[in-house]
Image (cartoon, rainbow, N blue to C red; front, side, top):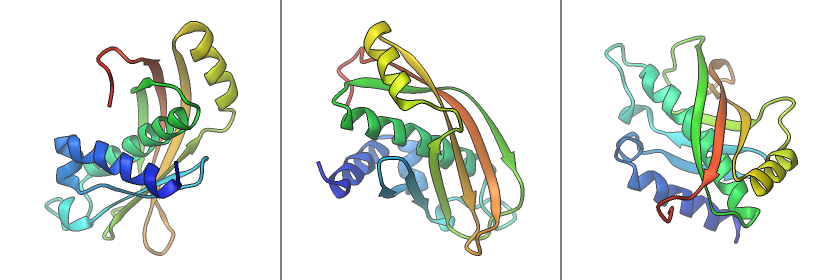
Length: 156
């Protein structure tokens, strides 16, 4: 599967989620270790004319979810990914389109998580995501733990 095919598949997931579809989230780039998502500011405005905080949290959470979803597919595993907990920091207003990037957190071990999932049927993995303004200034960050569990309803 090519990276473009993977991104298109992820976009279909987002289109099937009404909140993500309303935010017009799109997968932009995936290199195996980093996933970048985009959402236009026009679909995510608050009353001040900047990005809605809930949209920032959502696009970062979905970047982490999407990163794990694509990595699991590359590993040939059918699994469900759930956010277990997260912490968001809002550092500045964003007056640009939302662009989130997710990666494994420092100390995150993909191979250990895969081994745990294969042997125990579940695993957890810490990820980080961030949003920067068009000039590169950090405006929001997320640290989250995601649960990887067996599919129960056939998955997507």
